[in-house]
Amino acid sequence: MLDLQPGQLLARGVARHLRSHGFVSVEEFVPTRGLRVDVMGLGPKGELWVIECKSSRADFQADSKWQGYLEWCDRYFWAVDLEFPTDLLPEETGLIIADPYDAEIIRMAPEDKVAPARRKVMVQKFATHAARRLQALRDPGVGVTIS
Image (cartoon, rainbow, N blue to C red; front, side, top):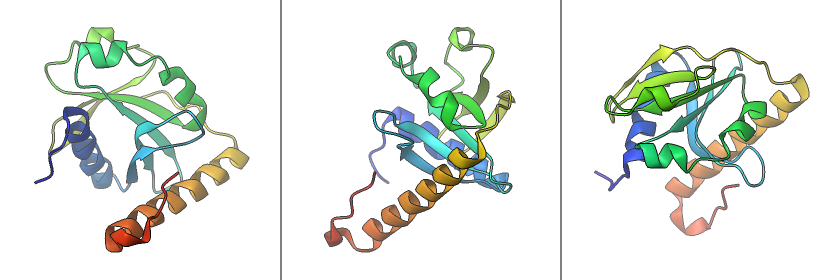
Protein backbone atom coordinates (compact mmCIF):
# COMPACT_ATOMS: atom_id res chain seq x y z
CA MET A 1 0.00 0.00 0.00
CA LEU A 2 1.21 3.48 -0.80
CA ASP A 3 2.26 5.75 2.03
CA LEU A 4 -0.66 8.19 1.75
CA GLN A 5 -1.19 11.32 3.84
CA PRO A 6 -4.48 11.74 5.80
CA GLY A 7 -5.98 14.07 3.17
CA GLN A 8 -5.05 11.64 0.39
CA LEU A 9 -6.79 8.82 2.27
CA LEU A 10 -9.94 10.95 2.49
CA ALA A 11 -9.64 11.70 -1.24
CA ARG A 12 -9.49 7.97 -1.99
CA GLY A 13 -12.71 7.34 -0.06
CA VAL A 14 -14.36 10.30 -1.79
CA ALA A 15 -13.31 9.03 -5.23
CA ARG A 16 -14.76 5.61 -4.45
CA HIS A 17 -18.04 7.17 -3.35
CA LEU A 18 -18.25 9.40 -6.41
CA ARG A 19 -17.70 6.36 -8.61
CA SER A 20 -20.72 4.67 -7.02
CA HIS A 21 -22.77 7.64 -8.33
CA GLY A 22 -21.41 7.38 -11.88
CA PHE A 23 -18.74 10.09 -11.45
CA VAL A 24 -15.11 9.87 -12.47
CA SER A 25 -12.56 11.86 -10.55
CA VAL A 26 -9.04 13.22 -10.62
CA GLU A 27 -7.07 14.09 -7.52
CA GLU A 28 -4.86 17.18 -7.29
CA PHE A 29 -6.49 18.82 -10.29
CA VAL A 30 -5.42 22.33 -11.39
CA PRO A 31 -8.40 24.25 -12.79
CA THR A 32 -6.30 27.38 -13.33
CA ARG A 33 -2.86 28.68 -12.43
CA GLY A 34 -2.46 29.06 -8.68
CA LEU A 35 -5.31 26.71 -7.68
CA ARG A 36 -5.15 22.98 -7.00
CA VAL A 37 -8.24 21.12 -5.84
CA ASP A 38 -8.01 17.88 -3.91
CA VAL A 39 -10.67 16.07 -5.96
CA MET A 40 -12.43 17.14 -9.14
CA GLY A 41 -15.44 15.02 -9.98
CA LEU A 42 -17.02 14.80 -13.42
CA GLY A 43 -20.57 13.46 -13.35
CA PRO A 44 -22.53 11.43 -15.88
CA LYS A 45 -24.35 14.55 -17.10
CA GLY A 46 -21.18 16.66 -17.28
CA GLU A 47 -21.54 18.15 -13.81
CA LEU A 48 -18.35 19.40 -12.16
CA TRP A 49 -17.84 18.98 -8.42
CA VAL A 50 -14.89 20.18 -6.36
CA ILE A 51 -14.16 18.38 -3.10
CA GLU A 52 -11.56 19.71 -0.69
CA CYS A 53 -10.32 17.15 1.83
CA LYS A 54 -9.44 18.45 5.27
CA SER A 55 -7.80 16.18 7.82
CA SER A 56 -7.68 18.59 10.77
CA ARG A 57 -8.77 21.96 12.11
CA ALA A 58 -5.34 23.40 11.29
CA ASP A 59 -5.56 22.08 7.72
CA PHE A 60 -8.92 23.82 7.27
CA GLN A 61 -7.81 27.08 8.86
CA ALA A 62 -4.73 27.21 6.63
CA ASP A 63 -6.90 27.05 3.48
CA SER A 64 -7.41 30.62 2.32
CA LYS A 65 -8.07 29.83 -1.36
CA TRP A 66 -11.23 27.72 -1.19
CA GLN A 67 -13.60 30.48 -2.31
CA GLY A 68 -11.56 30.81 -5.50
CA TYR A 69 -12.60 27.25 -6.40
CA LEU A 70 -16.31 28.10 -6.53
CA GLU A 71 -16.22 29.57 -10.05
CA TRP A 72 -14.72 26.31 -11.41
CA CYS A 73 -17.47 23.91 -10.32
CA ASP A 74 -21.22 23.36 -10.16
CA ARG A 75 -21.07 22.16 -6.55
CA TYR A 76 -18.43 22.57 -3.82
CA PHE A 77 -17.91 20.13 -0.94
CA TRP A 78 -15.68 19.65 2.07
CA ALA A 79 -14.67 16.07 2.86
CA VAL A 80 -13.66 15.37 6.45
CA ASP A 81 -13.49 12.39 8.79
CA LEU A 82 -15.83 11.65 11.70
CA GLU A 83 -13.54 13.39 14.20
CA PHE A 84 -13.47 16.73 12.34
CA PRO A 85 -15.35 19.63 14.01
CA THR A 86 -17.87 20.18 11.21
CA ASP A 87 -19.27 23.33 12.83
CA LEU A 88 -16.18 25.10 11.40
CA LEU A 89 -17.30 24.47 7.82
CA PRO A 90 -19.41 27.07 5.99
CA GLU A 91 -23.07 26.00 5.88
CA GLU A 92 -23.43 27.20 2.27
CA THR A 93 -21.13 24.39 1.10
CA GLY A 94 -21.57 20.64 0.81
CA LEU A 95 -20.35 18.20 3.44
CA ILE A 96 -18.98 14.70 2.91
CA ILE A 97 -17.86 12.42 5.72
CA ALA A 98 -15.13 10.11 4.43
CA ASP A 99 -12.60 7.48 5.38
CA PRO A 100 -10.02 5.71 3.20
CA TYR A 101 -12.61 3.24 1.90
CA ASP A 102 -15.82 5.17 1.25
CA ALA A 103 -17.72 8.35 1.99
CA GLU A 104 -21.22 9.69 2.46
CA ILE A 105 -22.74 12.97 1.37
CA ILE A 106 -24.18 14.50 4.53
CA ARG A 107 -25.16 17.87 3.07
CA MET A 108 -25.63 18.38 -0.67
CA ALA A 109 -23.86 21.48 -1.93
CA PRO A 110 -26.01 24.12 -3.57
CA GLU A 111 -25.79 24.14 -7.36
CA ASP A 112 -24.28 27.12 -9.15
CA LYS A 113 -23.75 26.03 -12.74
CA VAL A 114 -20.51 26.80 -14.54
CA ALA A 115 -20.94 28.80 -17.76
CA PRO A 116 -21.05 26.56 -20.88
CA ALA A 117 -17.78 27.89 -22.34
CA ARG A 118 -15.94 27.33 -19.05
CA ARG A 119 -17.51 23.86 -18.70
CA LYS A 120 -16.17 22.90 -22.13
CA VAL A 121 -12.67 24.04 -21.16
CA MET A 122 -12.85 22.25 -17.81
CA VAL A 123 -14.06 18.96 -19.26
CA GLN A 124 -11.29 19.04 -21.87
CA LYS A 125 -8.72 19.89 -19.20
CA PHE A 126 -10.07 17.07 -17.01
CA ALA A 127 -9.74 14.55 -19.86
CA THR A 128 -6.24 15.75 -20.74
CA HIS A 129 -5.12 15.62 -17.11
CA ALA A 130 -6.52 12.10 -16.63
CA ALA A 131 -4.94 10.83 -19.87
CA ARG A 132 -1.53 12.29 -18.99
CA ARG A 133 -1.69 10.78 -15.53
CA LEU A 134 -2.55 7.37 -17.00
CA GLN A 135 0.30 7.66 -19.48
CA ALA A 136 2.70 8.53 -16.66
CA LEU A 137 1.61 5.41 -14.76
CA ARG A 138 1.98 3.18 -17.81
CA ASP A 139 5.28 4.69 -18.96
CA PRO A 140 7.06 6.34 -16.00
CA GLY A 141 10.10 7.20 -18.10
CA VAL A 142 8.17 9.41 -20.52
CA GLY A 143 8.32 12.44 -18.21
CA VAL A 144 4.71 13.48 -18.63
CA THR A 145 3.99 16.88 -17.10
CA ILE A 146 0.59 17.15 -15.41
CA SER A 147 -0.82 20.65 -15.49
